[in-house]
Length: 359
Image 1 (cartoon, rainbow, N blue to C red):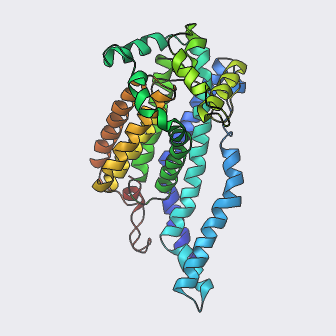
Image 2 (cartoon, rainbow, N blue to C red):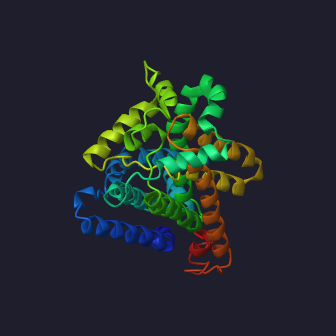
Image 3 (cartoon, rainbow, N blue to C red):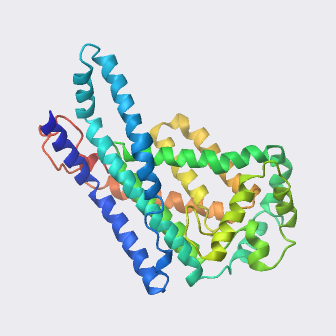
């Protein structure tokens, strides 16, 4: 049984090697950029991994152990230890173990991404806020989208703030964890996931560097254009909106040039909307009945990003289109690849071949 588990685990780990290599290459590139720019202190690879290392033994592993014990007691009440061994040696056991390794790699990816985002001020300036704000107004008949939304959304601002800053985080974390432990289309998903963050969150963010409406007065010097929106957001007290707290946090770190958890300012494109779009695409892929709530999540994320002052309208529109194009391109390319087996079916005891499983 232990030999079978080890074989499956090695097969699962081998299947994820391309994903780990992507993370390593990306982190290495960001490290070299930081060194080249003379700002090595802005490279903080472990800022998320350090927290994950605390959460893993404190919450995740005990949680998995509890699930295993419950399943063992239910399925083998007279021999729960045997049931636990079978639970761990089931095809799900090796995938769970490999998934924990993969998620750890994802935390390193986020450390590299945040480091890269904090390096953007070294190579770019907030030169695109006026153009993006103007484009958004033009797209909506000369009136900014936030003014169209304001009469409709003001009764729900606090709920939208919670959705945007809490529910979205939970939804994205759930998606990443679920796909790290998934048997099917795992590799395909994470390639799309990484590309979205790199292409949209680093490359395009640097090319069209902007701060967003909530920082417009500070980077453009025009305090009137979004004054009504900012006064409205700042009017919430006891407690203040999360957007106000994060605004102060982000600007303080931006002025200090300090890479910290979730730091870095860039508006275009919107990564909130990009990830909401990716979640929607995957939910729709899972079951068509999920299409309607998935689309509603994208629309609410887009509306919330504008209503709370984080983004211009065009930030979200671009993210929806670009995320779909990345998803479609990778999906079609992966579908044309033949399924390869890295171990004979007998050695895997009927488990799905890693290459096919992780595609």
